[in-house]
Length: 356
Image (cartoon, rainbow, N blue to C red; front, side):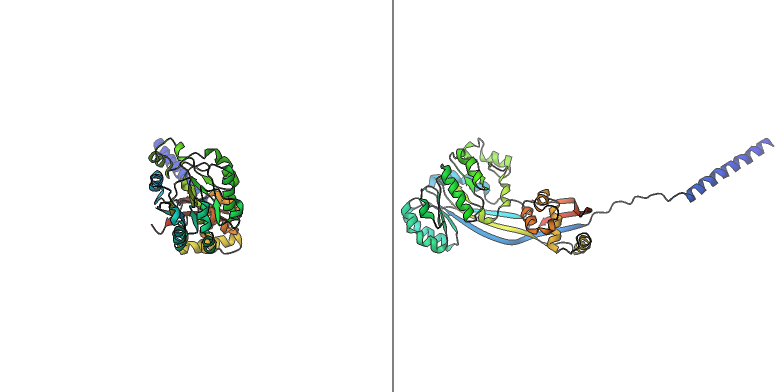
């Protein structure tokens, strides 16, 4: 009788517990289920060769020996690419300097639409070509000859004695006047004493004396990826901040012809549905609809923090600054956070060079 009672009590206790837990489960809030995070919306940004600028510098070797001095640099730089957005295709074409045919050389350069010539080692050669230089709007850079300021009033001749800080300053001033921008100096002899003063005059990139490297060019290429130490920057990769018109390659005595072709890559296509989605979000946050390029620039500006510094807090108000800073990007793949008026949007960006 006792056993039967105990069995009954046990059954009742189990039933009560089961009922209690069923009731608890029924009346308690639904458990929170965390869904797997979705992949963030993404743009596939392709770049094509949108603008091609060619700016040729006609430089002339005084001798075959000096050409051999510069030849390793040619092999090092030729064909290098600096970044995904701007590519410099560099080709060196040499010619030995001949005083007697200098005038013909100038005319030949003009026929190739060369705007800047480095050469002219005597006052006579400069004066003989003066009218032609002015007529064709060519700037002549004379690296050796000292020419009075009166002779270069029209800025058709730039004179520079490389070991003279005063001449370096004059050269920089003329570069500013001519809107030529930055100056890159290659030297095979010592001008190190003038580099500090030189770099303070204008924003120039001054390369250290090649003879002071203490390493072979192969080692430099391996260590620096591009090949030459610089005074103000770490590698020649910083050339991607420059446009074609402000790259000047000058060598103290050995001169050569340098063709610089610049291709500027600009976004041309992406996923339309992603853009439509982004456009609505953007409009809700900013009160206006972005253009396709603005959306890409807005998205890219969050990858490169430097652009935020340039454009402050509303980058879409300053597309020129964005594009200027965008030139420094080497391309990016990954996630980034977009912030507009305090709200965050997470996007994934893949920057691709459409030209391969």
